[in-house]
Structures are given as C-alpha cells and as structure tokens.
Image (cartoon, rainbow, N blue to C red; front, side, top):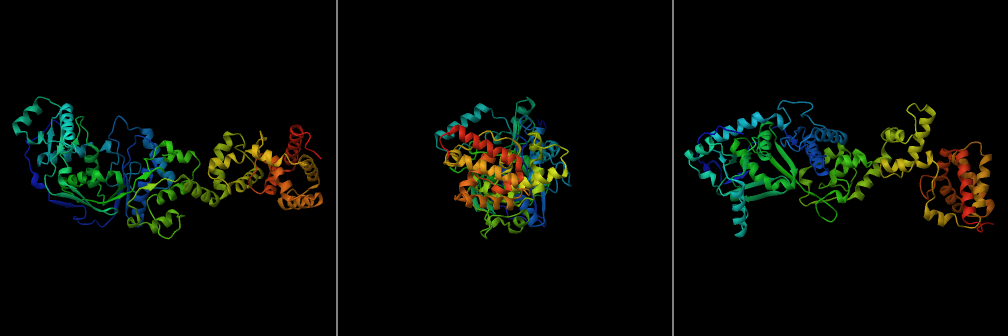
Length: 520
C-alpha cells in the first residue's frame, strides 16, 4: 500500500474537451500486444484477439508483444501461464518479445513491474492527477442505490476529491484504508476514433474518478495496462468489443500520464449460435479443449480468422501466409461473430485431407501406443502398413479422434455390427451363403490387392446374377462392422486375406444363427 501522499490539489483543466485517439503522432513502427491473464485456459475469444494482433503486426512488419497480466495474485497460476504459452505456440502464433524470450521493454509479466507502477502513480499524485479515496464499501453502496433510485447510472460521487489537504493528511496519518483515484474530466467528451467501429463518443461525465490503485497496494487492470502500453511503446491496441466501454478511461489515463494515445481497434464479440454468450454448454471454448478434441491448429487459426473477418474473395481456406496478405482492419465486421461448429469441422476435415500422412501418424502415435495397437520399435514394414491405414481413413475423418476411432477394426475384433446396417444388409435371403462363398473364393487370390479383389467380386456377382452392391455392402459390414468408410477393396487389402476370410465366415455364422430360415 502506498503510504506517502503529498497534499493534493484539484486540477480539472488538465483535460481537453475532446480527446481523440489519433491526435498524437503516429509511431513509425507498428507495435501490438496480447495481454492474457493466467487465471484459466486460453479462451477461443482470446486466441482470436491474439491472432488478429499477430496478423496485423506481420502484415505491417511490426512487432507482436506478449505481456502477461498476472497481478491478480489470488487467481493467477503458473499452470495457466504455461498452458497459455503452449496454446499460442501450438496455434503457430509467435511473439517478438515476451516473458520467455525477453525484449527491450521487459519484464513482460506485470507481477514483476510493480516498481514501475508505483513510480508512475507517484508522478500522478505529485502532479495532482490522482488522489486518495477513503470511502467505505457501505458509503459507495449507498451512493449506488441513491443513483439507481433516481434512474441514473451509478458513478463515483467525488466525495474524497474535494477533501481539504489537512483532512487528507489527517486520514493518511491515522492509517485509514484508502485507494487512489484518477481525477477525471468534468466537461466535454471523450472520442474514440476506432479503426473498426469508427468514431464512438462518450460524455466526459461517464468517465468518473475511477480507481487506479487498490487498497492492497497493487494497480488496477486499467492503470497497469496503460502504464505498460506506454512503456512498451504500443502503437495499436486490438482487442475485443467488450473492452470498448473501458477505452474512455484508458484514453484519459494516457493523457494524464502524458504519453501518446495508441490507436484502438475493437473486434466483434463471439456469440453462440443462439446469439447468447459463448459458454461450455455450446461445446469447447478453450484452445486446449479443441486440441484434445482432435482439431488441427491450422484449421483452428483459419476458423479464428473467419470469426469477424471477411477475406473478400469468397475463399474461406486461408493459410497463415495468405491470411497475413489478406488481413485488413477495414474488413473486420462491426457486428458480433456467430460460432459455427459445423464450419470448424468442415475446415478441419479439409486440413486432415491436406496433411501429409507421416504427420498425421505422428499426431496420433501417442494414442496408438496407449491403445497398444503399435510398438515403439515397429519395423519399417509395419510403419508402411500403418501409413497406408492412416491415408485410407483420413480422407473421411473429421478430426484426429475420429481418425483413431475409425481405425479400430484394423486392430481389434468387431464387437458388434452397425444395427441399421445389420437390418438392411444381413437379412436378405442367401446373403450368408454368398459371404461364405466369397470368403472361399479369396483363397485363390495370391496377389491380395484392391484391383484383383475388385475383379474377383465383379466376376462373382456376374456369375451369381446379383448386383455388385448386394455383395459389397454385406462384405463391408462383415469385415469392418460399419456401413461406410474407405473403398472396400482397399480396406480388404490392408486387413489381409486371413482376417477378411475369418470375419466374413463369422458374419455368415452370425446370420445363420440369428435368421436360420433366411437361407437358400
């Protein structure tokens, strides 16, 4: 807690009638920042903000700064801090300065910058721009209730702003708890010339004498953020629309600190499909959850770009390189972005198909080991077979988890047949005998590859006078337990002759036992 407090003098004339965020000279170098709080996992909204900042910096050859807002001692954790860094790295969002790599304006964790905040606070006190407030919680609550009864927006009354110097000194000497407030403007308006939303005006009266230093001796979010933005020479602040209401206070703070006001750009909020606030009931909300759900990082960053940004050419597939070339704050929407899981799944399926097979296999390798489907020292022949399986299944997979689940029948016996498929394909008269006959015909196949198997099935169905589908669909259900998947003959070739024959005969026995009368 600050205990030194020079005599205060009120100086409202320090504020101009209109404060524009573009009135100050533009810096030559674009510097943007992302400042997450390590109080939980990185939310999709935070990741989108980080990505937009990264894109802007890369587009204009500027610097992207990672700064960690960990002044909330009670809620900040090292685990969360590490997870946020890992999530950003997984997404491919790299920073030029940050807590792990340093930089010319460090340290980059706010908990390590308290001396700077104290020094800037003292400057504000000495210049009469900040003063101690001794109001109790009860007094502030009474003021709020009185304002509400009058239909007014609750604001600080300014009670302690008008204390005499002697009264302030007496209260400080007595050890009465206090906070520090900034002397706010009393007339005119604060204008935010936002790069996304345009000119947004706030009456000066809406910016009351807000708290900048808490009673526990730590800065508020507003104060620490503005002090750091000034010290780190941040030129543009790109953040979520929900922070727009804070911006007048920040502009007033920058003015009080006597530093250039950065340019602001407030990007739209992300809403759930029902246009409510996005929450866990709508599905995954953190980057870590998407990763655990098998979403690829390139799919997620592509999707983040589309949440409030229009590429303008009708193409929704944009790599980070293309996104950098296309990014323009003028194309960022003013209206809220609506979360669409189907779009994300579509993008992820596309990137699954584009990923080289060895990379996909490397992604799922830990899970294959956990299921004991592979050995750490698998030989070259086994690895080639695994690659072929992944290549076949990945063409229809929605995500990495879906990919693994659709590989089960290559490694494990079929526990049950798809119920709808069983009813549709295993009840036709003669199907069990045809499966047995086809299994027997496989014995004569010496080169067990897809083209040979396809020719065999064509010959069998012609000889039996049945449609190809009448044999292909039951065979697929017999060897995979499913009704859809990669090409049947590719699947059979990968499973091998012995497995296919065993499963086809097992299916025939199953049909005989379940429908003994349904035979030729």
